[in-house]
Length: 249
Ligand SMILES: *Cc1c(COP(=O)(O)O)cnc(C)c1O
Image (cartoon, rainbow, N blue to C red; front, side):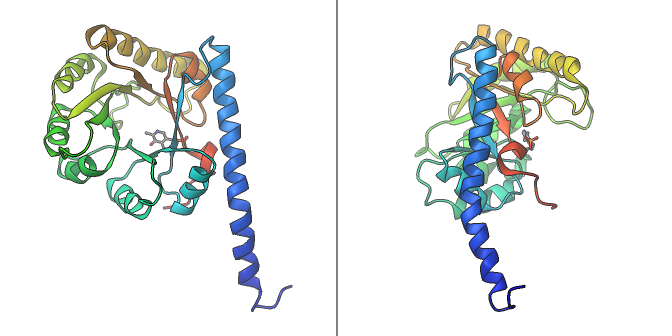
């Protein structure tokens, strides 16, 4: 047993040396899963972007994953995102995505800081984001979130409202509508998960016929990214498999 004087230092050294290699290993493992799924789907390598979902994870873990080569990070909670973005301004080309529900009284800070919002589910939010996006910044990239599981508790617009919303968002001057985002109901088994991803993929195809510049189908998480890629995902949002289990809040 180390003396109390040295004990804390041991812990600091262990943490400092193991964090980067763990980030490297996890990133390599997720990239390998993504590549295998992309290849099995007959799609070109690099066809699917990886968004690292860092919600509730400490900024040191974001730094470690950034050092390993990851650039795009997704956050769910506006206040938490604000703090982390301010703390990590020294990472030059980091890209921030808001993927959690957005209330209209919180749009300004978001419009002024992030690169993407995946969770636009009504026109009022889109209009505010467009009006509040600073002129000095490039247009804000947005996805329309669709409730593909039909669960009342889930955010997202109804599937039959998605096309009209995408077209309305498409004319807002300071937004660039990129596509759609959705989440299947958890733990329903592969066939049902696939059915919900397929619904979103079909909506995406219909939307693209109306707005040809759309290029983003945001779906797939740690447990179902392979199914999402087979169904056509172009961006998977992965948290646990990259960072480990989220700390208790
Ligand atoms: C938390 C979250 C994820 C990542 O989930 P994991 O299972 O940890 O990979 C992806 N998308 C959204 C919208 C989330 O809230």
